[in-house]
Image (cartoon, rainbow, N blue to C red; front, side):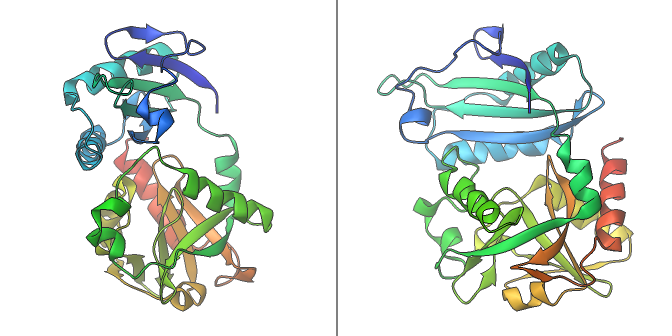
Length: 284
């Protein structure tokens, strides 16, 4: 992705090539920062209010100095306006600032959408399983594990993606103890059996994806019954089709798990229907 525009709290628009964080910012020193990633359609960030509410919740869980939501609205508008493109990726960040000072940094960054996504939507993604070894639901019960928080401490997530590439796949899915399906490094996970859709429940400590929430609404209109719960990975492996959801990737078909095909080993109908419904909801 190419960075198109950057806006920083208290400074406004800044050259994207100009440094904006100090080396002793706690987001760099300790990964203690919160962020949101938002798809922008025709110049409008999709469900911005939901993303801002989640950013505030993540910031509170991380005990970050609070910054008003209106600040992020203003920064987002400045960055999107300066980007010069209608369909982009918006990222909002809140850091604690320099160690010991307590002066937070808020910024909005606008980037291009990865060109490879539409090709992958046509071919489908190959996934591997990555065990975490945690009891199901522990991340939701143990606040220090930051379940459901979008933190800049993303090293484990990126390591999982790197392991997928090392094993010849495209993405990963985390498993709790008992091989219970959780989520992907940057996605929520879904699968279909007949007219039923299955997805892990939020009480497992997974991220409450904004796109996930949208699909829950759209699925009923399309005649699907959605079931949320704690499911062993065998059910995902035996599904008729599978897909993931996220703000940037939208609905992404999954055709393989740990080297074995899922269903027919090709993108299925539910993924296509929900992708179209998501675009309609976004006015795209």
